[in-house]
Length: 74
Image (cartoon, rainbow, N blue to C red; front, top):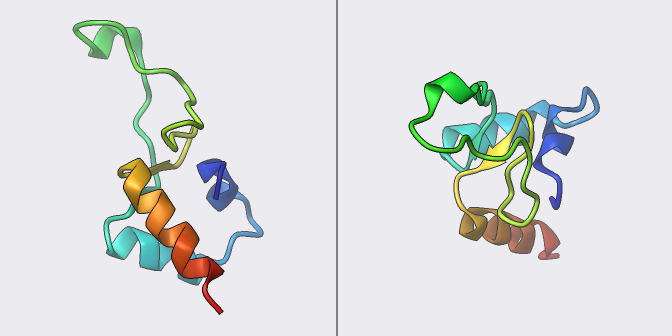
């Protein structure tokens, strides 16, 4: 779960992706970060510290941590 783009892989389980999207925990299709679309500096293409990938992002780092803990439970 460190790299949200791992969910973009063809090997990623569709059920998990669908559930995370339905619960509004991830953004699956990221918008392009074109300079003309931003008033100030555009966001970085990727920022693993806060859970933003090139194609997938967690809504917040808190969502990422909650899912990580849920998946780690037996």
